[in-house]
Amino acid sequence: MSQRLTERSIDHVVIERGEVGNSWRTERWPTLRLLTPNWQTQLPGFAYDGNDPDGFMTASEVGEVVAKYAAAVDAPVRTGTTVQLLRYASGGGYEVVTDHGTWRAPSVVLATGACNVATVPACAEGLPSSIASLTPLQYRGASELPDGAVLVVGASATGAQLADEIHRSGRPVTLSVGEHVRMPRTYRDRDVFWWMDGAGLLDERYDEVDDVVRARHVPSAQLIGSPARVALDLNSLSSNGVRIVGRLGRISDGVAQFAGSLKNVCALADLKMNRLLNRFDEWASETGIDDAVGPSHRFEPTRVESTPTLSLDLGEAGIRTVIWATGYRPDYSWLDVPVLDRKGYVRHDGGVVTDAPGMYVLGMPFLRRRRSTFINGAISDTEDLAGHLHAYIGE
Image (cartoon, rainbow, N blue to C red; front, side, top):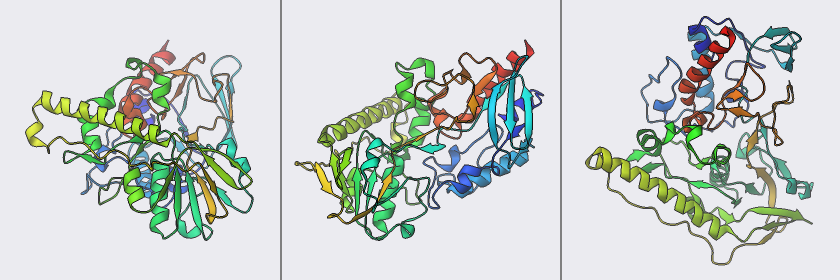
């Protein structure tokens, strides 16, 4: 956004509580890699120029890219500056109070992202104190966990990745599965993001879908970015020895209770994946590229035990750690402007904040397009919002 504002000769400042790329450098586990291939790591005026376009960056490498970009566009970043309060200013505009002074501006952009705080379900209160409880933001590697088995709650990208990594370290792992998005790493010899990009799926706009609220809260796909381009789904996890159970409902007296709907949940995920593959096949046929890619095929349905596990005594199972891979939410504790809905999310129309003229939000899932969820979504999102902001302050 800073680059877009500079292009329009709009005076601005970027306030950062840590260093540039702070969350990628300090709040991710060391082995984490992007889900998107390197060729998709693009920003306004910046494209990947390395020698591994089909590889996947580590979290620290992403932090380096952000820092390199900030320097290249000479962004006016004030690092080590924490916003303590953002409120309406007397006479119009906004007042931003920080631990290093106060700014006033006619317009502000909230670019703090969607993953500031890990969400932990209420059932975590029933976990015995003898069992360690942590979130992915606290996880730094299997070797730092207490000895014993691990229960990972949540089977989207984060949960599936952690279950796989921890199991490979030699620990028994149980994965609690709720609603999830099954997606192949590759299809017909191409990465799944090659297909989504080419078929136009990532360019679908927020005002073109039936339920944008639902679309903005769809779980992240079961994918992993690895040099081997391996698939990561419940079948591969269970084949490797991870125990698969249903959605965690409650924990009482050291016993975890799970929903019995795992079979139906998995069948729905399989159905949606096949619909996506159908769309890819239709695009390949319409554009005449069928002969340039591999043959169409379908994947084995998710294997589910005929008799689901409904309860598990955590002590008897040797579980000493529970990891809550149950999603994230933004932190707006510093925002003193009435723009939040009842769930704590900013009310906005494609990034233009509702009922707060001159305020914008950026870096949220499906902000303006499906690709908003990924790094290169910033290219089109910032162009649109900077144009709107320019028109607003010019009125």
